Image (tube, rainbow, N blue to C red; front, side, top):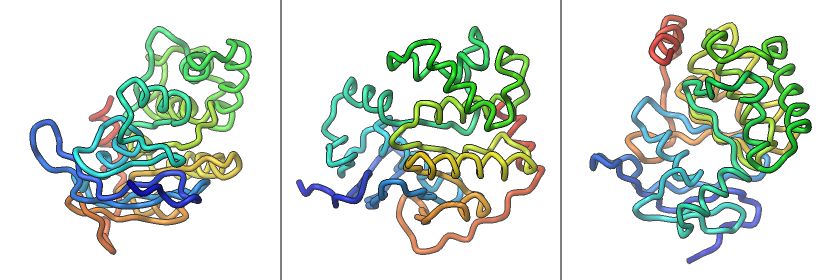
Length: 246
């Protein structure tokens, strides 16, 4: 077993993953992600982007291949060790916002910090700071049911950024947002990541989103390819994503 290069915070070699229903998702993907880098994983829907993020973050375990985080072999960890790794070192943004309905906005945003043992007061200060950056600070005492789909996604992005994770995995993070909101949210996310030294692995099928990354890796049918031509995302497609995930 060969350890990854020293300057790669994440490293995968010959990663194979098959969905529980038996359909192939990844067919031998290898890549490295440098510390502080924003890496975009691009490709059409069904190309394996989400599966790759799941394997890199320890949410899923590949049937073959290796995944390393800071020279620690994630692929040999048990379920509990991988869960601790995700809690303590990783952040995650889903395409659709999922919040705890019984908690208000700032409590949802501060939840990962409090689960790590941060005091309620310090967790609230950090959450409110990020909510302000994402222009949703005035909603901090509302419940998720009182927010729009776009506002709920901003809370999810705040929740991922507030603990200052070593690596942030973002799976189509602006899918629920209207085009007018996407640019601001993405700029906030990428600026925050660079200023805090957060490594970002960003899955997207949107060329404008991928253009904000330092580097791009393209997937097609679960394998790395040199170039994937992505169709532009239309406003109607953005609205459809909102209605489907509402």
